[in-house]
Length: 124
Image (tube, rainbow, N blue to C red; front, side, top):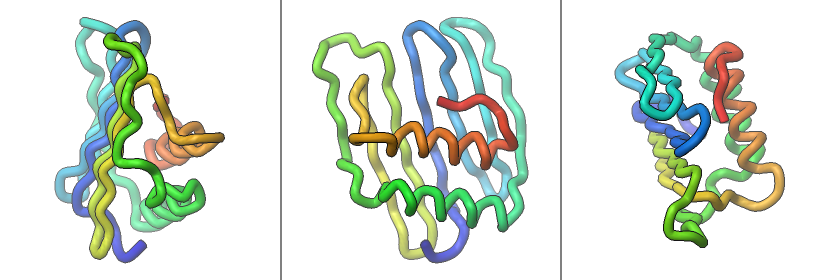
């Protein structure tokens, strides 16, 4: 990937269980975690350029550029919805799903990369 991201919006929303949202504004990464209707816990993070490079390398390792743009739900009321929007110089990613994920270990490995970028905070 070329350069650090200038746009990040990533979300996993569950009907029952923990939900997460991560957004980037400037160099500040906002991490939110919540359960159902409970108030959101919000933290502001400032990953170092090295941490961003490691994250972006991890995305390449899971071949994220080859993920489908959408993994639609097989049922009308999915329990989990997720989306990933990320833009960096020369790079644009937009993918989402509902109870369906990329094949194999790609999504769990993506979640591991997120946890690393978030300093070990829960995600996934």
